[in-house]
Image (cartoon, rainbow, N blue to C red):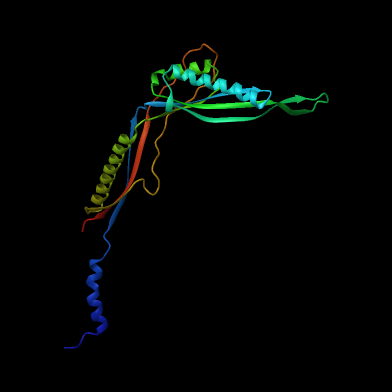
Length: 237
């Protein structure tokens, strides 16, 4: 009997070990889910603007107007953490004049002060009436209305679970089409590396109207809570 060369013998011994350590096949999918829910609050940003001959006069007049906005919000039961100053600014103002020679130029014209207040409205049925009241009470600008959920966690968790189930269904379809079966779950990445869809916030806008008008028509609509997960399964041997 001839001796087996040492190099060949080493290959025979190592071969089965490499086969046992072979990386199993994998199926990776991205599961998605979304749910439409009704918002339970709205945030309105209201601004008042004032002009004065000097910084102090402009700021004092503006502060009085901002306090009026806060008082009007209080009439609707809005106070405490549902009221927040969004921005305060004071800057020199100017106006355009035409010289006798026909040239146009800007000249100083006192100072302009602006105070923006963020108002959170939890009784959405009164949102339109509040906006009308704020406009009548001296608000110069309403930047917009953003709707949201006070406690989105429960809905977000439910949607994430639906996204995982969607990923499982996709993986099973792919495995069946490939003539194989799913093995053990290897990983779940949330959000997936490609990025998850962000919740979509419904928005409405209103402009200042004539005093004594109707309540501003605002429809809350629904919010879309979305989730995506990246799931990887091993292929059964």
